[in-house]
Structure formats: structure tokens, C-alpha cells
Length: 116
Image (cartoon, rainbow, N blue to C red):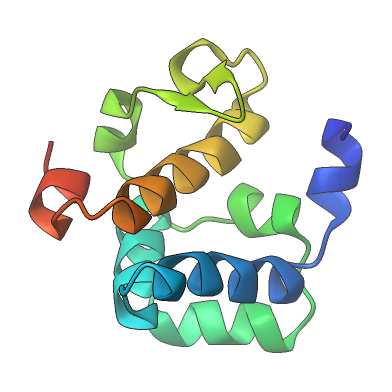
């Protein structure tokens, strides 16, 4: 899928997919929210607003109030691509979230996921 299509997708459509992936493996939506807040600096209320206001996935990351500087330590493979080698900054931000949700679904503790 090309980057522009990903950026144009509604965060309201992506968010339930992230939660479903976590819940399918026995994790919670609260943990997904904690990851999103940690990564982007959004509050839970701001995440809900983004869902309710049809914010695009690209704009959700472009407008992140306080991207966590520790996100640059996120390493690994998502969809066959190493997140640390992604050249496009916006796509890298999106893949950081994908990687963290993957780790959550694999059973890693929140401490290991967020506080590397």
C-alpha cells in the first residue's frame, strides 16, 4: 500500500484494529492507549477527539503534541521492514506504533515496551 493511502486513512478506522490486535492476545485497550500516549504525547481525551473528529492517520502523527524522544530507540521488523531504516519520517512514526502494538500482542510487559 502506498504511503499516501496510509496517511489518508481515518484514525477512527485504524484505532479499533490496533485494539483488536491487542485484545485478541489478552491485552487491553488501556494498554494500547498508554502506548499511543507515550509515543505521541496525546492525552486519552485527545485520542478520543481524534477518533470522533475523523482525523486522518497522517494528521494524527503530524499533529502529535509531544513525540517521545525515546521512540528513536524502537528497533525491529514490521511488515518485513526494519523500522529504524525507514527513510520517510511520517511512515517511520506510524511503524513505531505498529511495532509497539506488535510487542504488546506478543506478551511483552509495558515496562519492556515503553522503557527500553
